[in-house]
Amino acid sequence: MAPKITSEYYSQEVRLLSSGSGPLQWIAGLYAFHLSGDANFILSSRADPSQPLLVRTFDPVLKTTSYAGFAEATLEVVPRLFVTGGIRYTHEKRSFDQIVNGVALFSADSGKNPLTGSRIKARSGSKSDRTRISTRPTAPASKAVCST
Image (cartoon, rainbow, N blue to C red; front, top):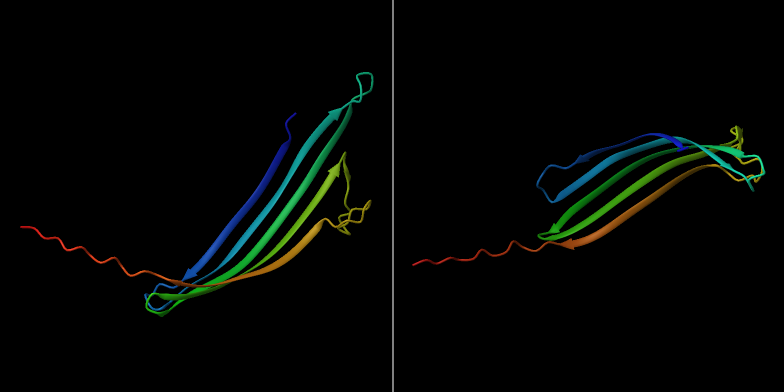
């Protein structure tokens, strides 16, 4: 039997950017992502044909939520010389639950596996930045065309 897998997600990004032709160009924005999914797997096996069929069901549930904010600006310091700087911060929350044969492997209240004490929920935040100096070539010279 094929596993039954379901999921729902959304992803959205909103950006604001400069529209002028001045020496400073910038962009800023927000990003959001959410995923929730579950599956139902049924596995059956037997050690040898004389043994009864052993049936196991697995029902994992996964959730991920992520938010980010970002900004970047480019300044033309002198003609054709540009300095760019940017930053992004992301916050992410994940959880995973597993049910085997109708029994939850993790305690929903403590967020820990009762057998191993391992965590099943995670949160993280990260910051990244970048700096760049670049030049842009001038437009190519136009060719003169002579006709007689």
